Image (cartoon, rainbow, N blue to C red; front, side, top):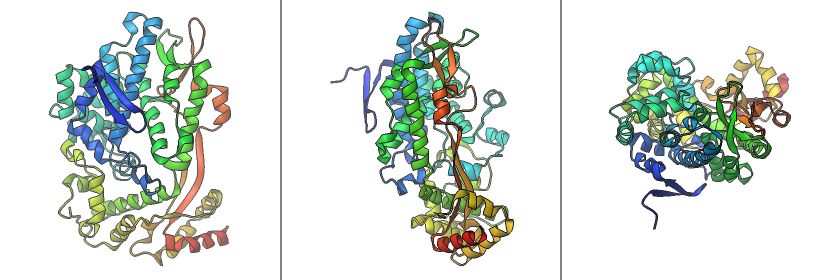
Length: 471
């Protein structure tokens, strides 16, 4: 029988996850509607269309991240007792805040990985308008400078006084919601805690790399979590401020393992050509609906869609309650009811049909440099459109996509860059990404997989022949 101060959850990746003492409060937070919404959003969107086991949700990832936060917190608490003065050690509030931040770090994400945010929200989203819609005060907007839409939504879900999550947090400890929000966005009374939330080696990455690898059946991409956590320690910068980092002698090999595993997951899983082909189908469908709305065409809820879904597609900010209704189920209903939603628009209907039948856009087999050179001549875009038009109903522009595929290995912002800590009596810091071994393994921070062209299955051979003739 478990001790009354311990709560446990069985997990396929971490085994029996134990939450002890103040960490056990995490289990109480699971009943909040804001957290339960994450059950209805897959962590990796369309990845399960290629790797059937990748059905896990953002909820399971969030809970796993909270568990890793608990492990990291226990370890740092022990190390700090030896290396830091009492005033700089993580207290019980900081350790609990770290666990809560792990659970809540993904609250604001939209459905289907990052497709929704990339296409519907876009890069030039109106921060001020969204802040008003989400009831975020100007002082908070200026203090946190949200770079991404989901960060602002996460903040709103944490701090909304009427929310279940906020109520539970404040009942447990007054002011904890604001503290957790500050920890998530780099403003915390123990600054060294912030790198544990967002960085080259953070609690988020430690869970998703292992979880995604296990669920996809890619054991070579897993990480030695226990060993990595055991290598965390404290070092000092030139201003004598303490920071968390990895012991350089013992931690470097496992850090290399983590970064190598993450790079492999990008190449094998996250940027798989079939997954990208499905994502662009959905992205182009959402784009088509947005373009129809901008052209004055009326969109319908189809009798089943939450109102906020179409409002956001129309580029309008919505309330927090309407954001709460945004999940994968809403998007699947949108796809299923696309004929009613788009009033029979042939382009939207054809895109929806391909999504439902798992008929993704296919990547041409010709190398990236040739594709890039091919599209340098604008006339060739029209030639591709002409080929695609023979095989699709509606506007061919929405049925092909050319873009460079790449990812970054390590963080560029010094606030997120991980530290290595030397073995000296007064341990000094240096950035992990600056170590010669990392520089040798990853000579370029941006890993390019080349420029890819995605077209409908039926047109694949003819488009390839077209590019070959023009090359």
